[in-house]
Length: 405
Image: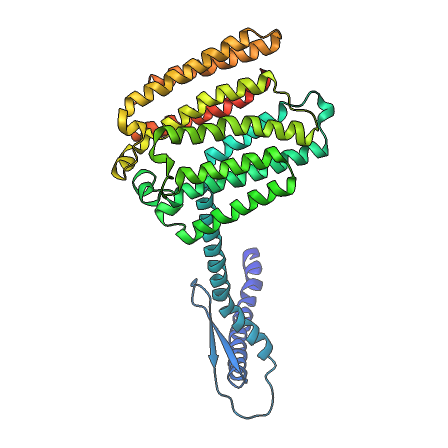
């Protein structure tokens, strides 16, 4: 009896719940029918929503003619908003695709410009000028805004001239670079010849303009000599194109990298910026002599991986004449001799800290060079190129040791 009594109230509520559910469904259908009638009687574009099961919701926009009732649909603003929401994402995606393509194109151009500048030469110029500019400094009292400005003038003009020289060389070596260095922007077609000419002229004008504005005779001398030798090295004209001749090619690189960078920029900082009479120090003399040897090695070694293209286009480099292996051995022996001389110079120093820095530093670099030379394969162009870049790293490291001499 207790169970029957408790079940009856629940049973009593069931018909009522069914009835209310049925009424709810019937009212819902009636309301939907009325709403549908209102939608189809509205003026302007309409949106119909269709959902079936768990399928994705779709919004369909329809242009439905209406009867001329003279009344405006209350839902028109909402429906227009939903129609625009359905159509605008595609427009936004198009804008995103356009911006993405522009970003990719800009990135490609910047990467091409990076390789057009030959970054290993840019790094060498920055480190060389920074190291040599410190040599005239006698104490921290010499550091000032004027000194910083004079250094930045020298650095900016030298970098601009550097880009002119390497860019001009690429303009006249397009066909050779298609064999030797096909990834360079002019050889690969990433930059047109017109773009290359514009870049070369722009950086030349920028370099000379900075030099004139500085009113520094040593700086202008360095820029003009770099311009003349860089042009004579690359331009294919009578009595020019000095890169065809190994000794003239080495002479150009040696004068610019060893003499101008050391003496001209040292004089610029000492005479023009610090207003002191020119007095070469032990450090600048050592740097000039050591870098003469190093620049000669760079001039000779850079032709080793380019033998195929140079031979095809009549460039009689020393690697073409003597062979790659002989030139490689010559370069290694020259560098080891230079490091031995540097160790002897360091050993003769009276300052214990400088002596340790110079002897240990050059000894370590000489050991690393000898160790790396044992793994060199002259028949592998990839190995040759990597070793050439390794020589540039030794070149960078030397500028960190020069101030200790």
